[in-house]
Image (cartoon, rainbow, N blue to C red; front, side, top):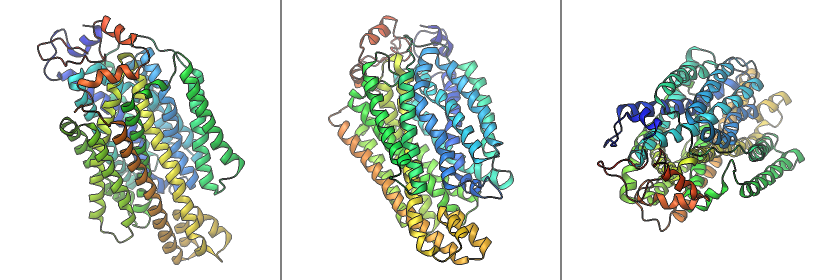
Length: 564
């Protein structure tokens, strides 16, 4: 048994039938660390309307609001590859603690930002910290838990993201009732402090069996490619000039850079993003499905916040309370999914969960200003159930397909697909929302003063503000009707993406008879996914170190643990 095993499980050789108290404490630290990251994804949603207010917030435009979200998720997504490599190379715990420090300091910076531009910059640097945190958390779960308990630990880790979905809007609403908008970022600070102390005391310190090399070319190409595409999409929607050279040109340039990125990663021996992992059909299907799921989820949260605080007239706290039920569904769906997978298999459970989520996205089409709130709550609970049931098994499939020394990079792929889905969800669906709203409200602005037209066509918030300033009550109804129409169009696209994810799962998991992604068949996908099978031999020769791929026969309670 290695030193890192003794750090977690003590000196006893036989593996206990259930995780030890120290393992549960280690998991709680990892959950708390990723909770801070996901909390920051959701806590800003309720504050968007306040940030757009010229008096109470920063007077941010819709374009700046999109970037206040996208700057964080974009940097987060493109640097996750680097975070995974650094975690595998220099040690997961060390990288985790550094990431928490960066995240905590920049949270305080964002809280006292003086302008939308400064807030966007602070959020971007926060994304750097998150990119170091997330791959390390999932990789450390593979370090701490053996194959028998890993699926349950990942289900808990995934399910607790539901706490962020609920706590983010609730905390944001409560703080905005009593404090200034920047207070929503200060809640990260105590979470970071507790995670740093707990991580130092409880988490293992070992590095990977093999040191992964840094890939600066791959990191640069992926970063510039995704940035160019997302920037072009957001700017095109904001300006409504899709054929402009600096919009269409950037999108085309970004796609070309991503093609070059794939070609380069296939040719170099130590890529930051190992494209060869996608030779595994289940790995590919799970990764793409996760991306499409978070595309719809993040986009729906974006427009749901404006729906509740706009046409419904709710306060930030009321909106947070209204959005909370989705967390109940996630918290129930993630743990139950492990049981369902054992009975029905990952293919049916994940595809079914995504189809349920898709149905709830389509459900927004039936909401207007008078829809009873219980229907909205029911939709959110069902949505959470579908998401919780689909995300946890796909995450376990991704991790199960990886050899021991690639868990950091592999978990980075998983989280990258989530964040890229979130970035594109806000960019694409936010752009559709703004474009359809602008087209719909245009006729209602005919004959109004140019200053009123400029503000009202930018956003419903601007229209309501000008209606109050200029004494135009009819403008409020026009803004509400135009927003509802744009929301109905936008949510159909989000639902279609979730349906596409379900179809991908049904196709890529076809013929798979295993009942659990972490069970008997996992060793085969891992060998298929990794182009260098000698890594497996290295791991076994080292005595089956923590995180190694389990052998086809799972260990019994009387056997020494194969993975730990």
